[in-house]
Image (spheres, rainbow, N blue to C red):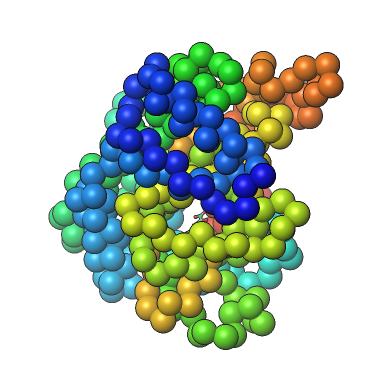
Length: 330
Ligand SMILES: O=C(O)CCC(=O)C(=O)O
Ligand SMILES: [Fe+2]
């Protein structure tokens, strides 16, 4: 049983048929079925691309508040969320009463204007809101998403292998993926008071979807609570990702992989920036117990659910702007 988050070095590999992929998959299975978290090193995202994305996020968050607010988050879940506007009421980990001390710009998968889903008015489909006063922002983030997405899709294949499935057997669920890149900024919190006051950068929560690939800066402050254990630190390790299992992947694997609570308290004394990338399936992907995760002794624990249905329920509960929207239209 693992007690600290292991670092899995992919060795620059991207071939799911290689022996190296089988070795990574085995390590991944250990990590995701015990802690639900792993560091990923030896990946193919270029350090320059990643640094440019962090620089773009910093410049965005340093912009005047009125400019940021001009991109206020819209019904398609794209745009700016100001300080203290999301409260994780669905947390199974803690009774959360204070909103998060963070601000963020949510970017999602970009769609062409003639996308059939967008034209049909499906939820979560729409244009991103770009800070046009920062001309470098959009190209920097688009390049970052292109590269981190390659890593995410490789990890989906490693997960398939780790579960005894053909490497590409899950690919088709991600034909029209639902992706989120959240450019987060956490202001410094006072060193002592954070826990006493229940005020956190990010209150204890689990992620909704399939996998999260988190790039964090060198501030520290991310903590993880493994099953039956106490909070442990997930300190920054240069040029790695923190990979974790989301609730939908736990469900897909019939509970074999665990979606583990985590939180952020920024006690670094300075600003903290992070870039979580959430790679989720198509909205209509049916999340149904994977064939190798059930047998006579392990019947499916959950009924099948379309990913989109589950996602909308979670989002509508946790974001103030969506609650207000539903009140307005009720
Ligand atoms: O900022 C971080 O390090 C973690 C963010 C996070 O957990 C999330 O956005 O789901
Ligand atoms: Fe998270």
